[in-house]
Image (cartoon, rainbow, N blue to C red; front, side):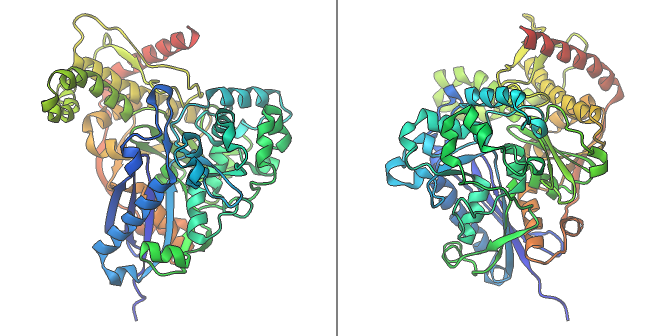
Length: 544
């Protein structure tokens, strides 16, 4: 008798929308999918790009989640819905929010329903620069450098800096502020009915990479350290956590309330979840020696290493190394670029401005700008005299965090065309990617293959060929539009007991590859020289 077919749901909370993926656990085949945009975010509410302020209302997550799952279930039918056995999810990070004593985000309280500092603070929000500087400065003087496993720096994009900034900027929140929670952890708490800050399950992945959690110092940094940064941190004393869970752990079961809201049966296993790019790497089949590049508006570069390979080493200048953050039993390593596709979008907006002002009725043409730029840019030869750009338009994430760095272009002349500038920007993003590869190798991390996932990897052969030429490595593109949600579905199959471990789930459920890019030796040789100019130019900007 054949075992009953089972299905899991992988949920991927992105920057703009949430998607749900219903997957067959025996082969990873997609049964149904749905994508729903966040309505308030789509209107630009609570955000101010002039100050790099990006906030999201928790209702965007809740309403979109309900709609998204119900749409996916409707597409796959009641027979499949009845056999769903597990749910796991990924979110952007660090995307934290202040909560009250029940674990309710302050923006769900009537008095703070429209207050930006009571919202979830999206990963790319850079309003907490000053707070991050203070954390970094004290870390270098403290008896323990709590940034040791975060690449040596703490980012303004991460939880501790953001929460302090919110408390400083909005003192009216302090009376109700009791704790804080990452988006990832809040979802697990909601679906399992466990949102109290002291007992809510916490993701090892998010805690280790974004909140300086590490077993070496017993969990989070000491309360005395944070008090020395600012006594406002005492609001959180005793209201957080010391233990964390890896993504293969079941942290509870779907409550009756959420079963009704989602159209599922109660009791389904719920996983703790993780950061989106980490689950994307799992969906791509990451293993030691593999570098997975998650390519979208920004990039995340994920690798894993054995304990023997890493030893006691702290890899310099990355976004963290955390035991079990990607695959249990291995050290997860994260790096990335804070702007990638966002740079191309910025250039498109620059060129579209006159069109918007003079011919608003032809706004349909704006979407064609990047297509035409790509067509012309890929016809251009690669020469040693080409303009060279820096990719730091949203600061530099890695190697060596510096959110104050800025983009720049050198080598322009009156003969430089728009396609030539676009080509330089594409090359800049590839140069930044190569710098990450080289830092991993310098630190002794094995990289013998590169797998790319994400929208750019699937849609832009020009960008991908440029990446391969500059990296000097073959790059394979995963045959999946939803690698992050697929990784979540894989872990859901483990937490529900269908597969014994994530290695088995990957082997059974991983898709193949849709494209492969091999370096062109002639272009690679020229790009080696342009990369040297990129490094020199970057150093001069850093020193200026």
